[in-house]
Image (cartoon, rainbow, N blue to C red; front, side):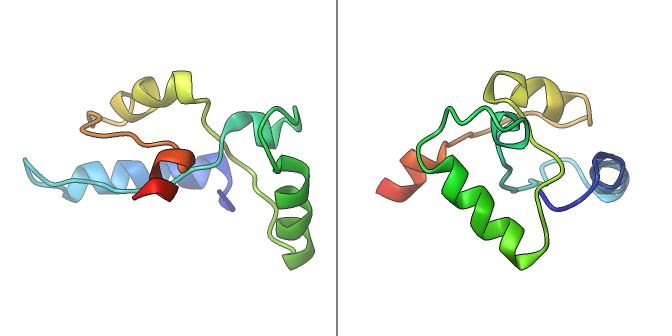
Length: 90
């Protein structure tokens, strides 16, 4: 995500504050390994280069194994979680 971690935290706080029971939040995210430049995902270096060219580098990512904890930490629960590969097939 192009936002600083603090901005993301504040955004989720506002979402929780103004959400009613049953509301859903839909968002995408960059995997933490991309931010950490681990080069473990297919096409990661090329993708990072193209984003950096635009001048808006990613500043925040979530590890898939930490996704549910991240969401719960903001007072929400995961209803569905799809990886990029699964979304490409739909």
